View 1 (tube, rainbow, N blue to C red):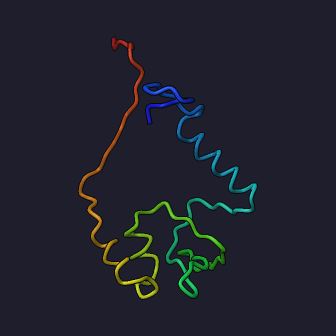
View 2: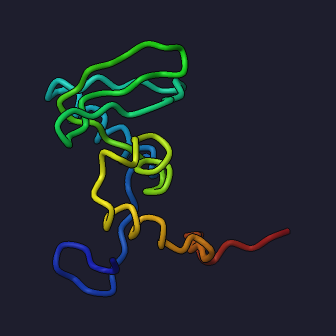
Length: 116
């Protein structure tokens, strides 16, 4: 952070905002065969032989996958969506120990604007 093309202390902004980052990631993933669905709640992540094998939607639809990505918290991903017995005990203990009590937020604004 705070570096652009090797120059420290310089900031850059994504064209199209953070939605532009999401769109670029989405297009890249789809070009490599990924299927992206939105507004569909996941009820569980399935596993086989210690690896994620797909997921089940709240609608009951099962989707098989080579790779499952989650943008949920580690607690939700590993403790709510996966069966704990499919994970090593020490890993489950580490996930349970994550402290979510402090959040960080950053707002970038334009300087020099005057309110009327």
